Image: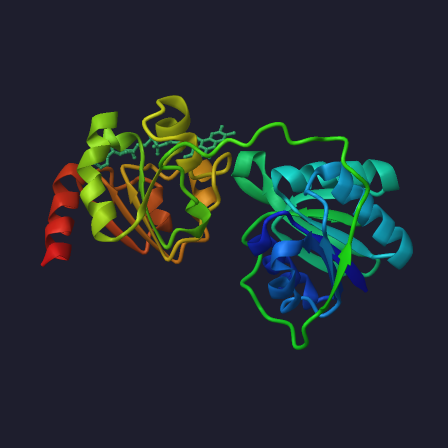
Length: 297
Ligand SMILES: Cc1cc2nc3c(=O)[nH]c(=O)nc-3n(C[C@H](O)[C@H](O)[C@H](O)COP(=O)(O)OP(=O)(O)OC[C@H]3O[C@@H](n4cnc5c(N)ncnc54)[C@H](O)[C@@H]3O)c2cc1C
């Protein structure tokens, strides 16, 4: 069996290659700048695309490679660009797409996939003959291939999209997916000004500040790029410190991959404690300063 892997995020490409290489031969399509590094995770051919990464160009390149090499699976990272690419490919090649999957296995001539369902409340397992997969980030740890792949430069057709303007992210924008420690606040923080009261903790542990959906999306106390959850960022820090977060399933869906979870909540029956490795039942405004004092000592 053979798969062609693509994601516009290099880390994600490496995860996909690490996961699928255990089950089948893999080639991949990537941008030029990290092709050599990605080749360490791909035993087959790394097609290094010289064009800009627009969905119409990428899907055309993948469709051509598929017609030439007859891949069993087209594995696409589930990002904004990846979802467009998968949609175009599904339509163009007439192949079914299994979307947003978090697990995959082969079962005869079908595949069995898992994905979140009912807004993240449960996980559904489906058997299908889908041959295009969009795969969520975090599916695997990086695992180098036994032999490095062969990098081949390719040029796709010009895109019908043109880049009109580039704008920098707003000051303070973060890459939460890469953060080692995250200090996340929920509605228990009370108001925007109180976020300053937990900043000393974030500084003491050198963590990034994040929040639940109400904090980021509804009240705008933090910027939207700091939202963790089903409709926000999916994070996998070494430590996730949840302050005044109840732990609804839509929030958990974004931080489930954290290695160690610490929760502080004044309600001892808050569901966040079911996810927590360390839980403190108490008021964040009393507990956090004590932890900061201890860390300073
Ligand atoms: C389709 C869909 C997508 C969603 N996506 C997301 C998402 O991506 N991310 C997300 O977070 N949510 C998401 N939600 C919303 C989610 O269902 C919850 O409403 C939300 O996570 C609750 O946020 P919270 O924990 O901050 O607030 P609450 O549920 O109100 O919890 C506040 C907690 O703070 C505690 N508390 C209060 N004061 C203190 C104090 N002084 N000290 C200690 N503890 C205190 C309370 O006991 C309570 O447990 C989504 C919902 C839907 C329907």
